[in-house]
Amino acid sequence: GLRVNSLRASTDDVLGALQAAGLEIEECGLPGSLLLTGGGGGVGALPGFGEGLWTVQDIAAQLVGVLSAPAAGEVVLELCAAPGGKSTHLAELMGDAGVILSVDKHAKKLPLIRSNCERLGITSVSAHAADGTDAAALKMLLAGAAGGRGQADLVVLDAPCSGSGTLRRNPEHRYEDGSRLGELTALQDRLLDAAAECVRPGGALVYSVCSPLVAEGCGRLGSFLERHPTFSCPPIDAANLEAYVADAPVLGGARRGVRS
Image 1 (cartoon, rainbow, N blue to C red):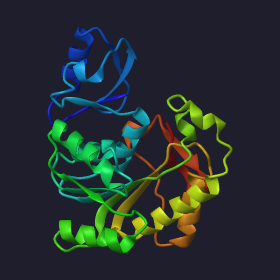
Image 2: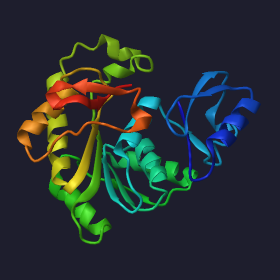
Image 3: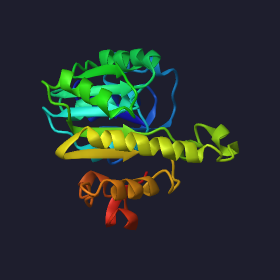
Image 4: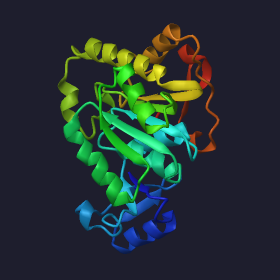
């Protein structure tokens, strides 16, 4: 999938330029989202990429930004953020107006976030190395970036997972025996608990994984809601997500989840 940078280009302009270069491209229902169906070549050589008019991002990953629906001027925290695809998408949806803290545990990955922001012309994102399970450290980062306020309007957590939903791109996952699943779900719980401490009252927490396993998706959120009764999972009513909305009884009933 490709994502048009709405700060610099229109979908029609990018679509036309790529089609003129011989690529087969079609729109896929999300704003600014395109799907490459034929042709190709080196990404960096394609028209508009170097100028930051568009970037590469799977449609499923783009759903996270659309579901998050950030507003201009908000304070946003993204955890496990490298290489920055979701952070830059959030910035585009906010008109690059606000504060986005893009946090990853691995400092060596931060240049990826910064280089993506530079190419796309985004200034509202700052990249930080921190442990996403350490709520105190995260709140200190927020306080330093958001005028002393230690909580965010929106926290987005794209948690480490088994990757079982990415077999097309990562076929090696097919041969994993699932022995790490318990370790991963425990980590997902710790990340969710830390994220919850960083959300202001009335704010939003968005959780995503690239796995269809119930244990990593609805199972984790069901457990989270038991531990955090002040949180609830509202039904999803965004028109752009109509084709992806799914029922999740453990989260409260109809239209509680999004699946690609």
